[in-house]
Length: 411
Image (cartoon, rainbow, N blue to C red):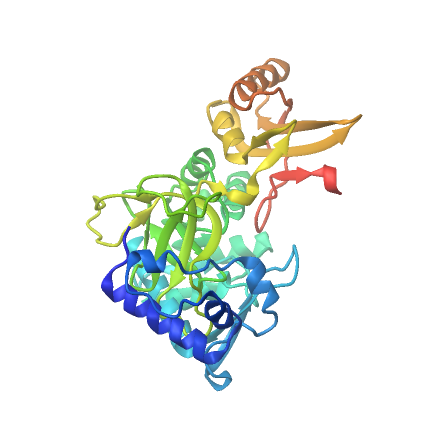
């Protein structure tokens, strides 16, 4: 996807704002000697920005607009180091709401919907992002925030929520609770707007069937506004993103070179009009590809494929590079397994061991199933894991994101 003349001008405007503000990234651009571009080739010479850069700018080194224009900050979790703090101007907040409103409209929502928001509020971008977009649409917001499943279901049934906004993990937990309590006939949900973690086809099918709703993938990250920079459509063949607000490219994560449309690689995003903290060529570490051509839904906005994983998801076990998505692909091929699994990696007696826990119902032979799963995974990754089959419901569910990989080698 080549950068347009208009986008080049927008990038130049953001470069000038960064340089003139002497912000952290502005200094990096000056040091690179590139403060203007006129072509695709020039753009691809611009230095990447990484999360480590953003952490080095802590607390407000990314601030590019004058402080009197900053109306809000959001932050990443900071679980693996210093948090990243992102300043927003009033225009940034409104632009984000406009993008989110587009997402809701892409999902077929209207001002008559009742939107139950279950992601977290506060420094995290999710809760308030879902809320601002729904208010911009004119829909009724039920700002629940995370957890308290009893209260969630009470509000869902009494207020007749029509749209659920959540992580896939919490959507599954709610679906299972609704089935257990026998209250599906009291649920009025029609759609689910799901984001913040990668989820497989089996999990999608479980949620959709148990709740009888349409599901839409929403995309975004704290550093780039938050969720709402893209969403899947009714045709469910990729995620449309708003290219009047962001320029998206796919690179080879090893070489850093841009790859052709259709080829898998790392998503890199440039903000085109962001004022508080513009980012140029930000490496997301998300793995996807640009889908060539126009979508059957009729939207002219370009598409990327669903997020297949992250470059930093890779596990090195017995000298082999393994991605969770490879394991999930195998597990999905077994209809007797649920969508839930857990991978535990440990180092015992001088060697690495991978244990995979999976769920099934009591009608199958657990030992036979574990052998068949282990054999198929070996054919995929080259070595045999230990597979433990447990009853459905025994693996942990989460009100936020489910931790599926636990590497005990470094604990």
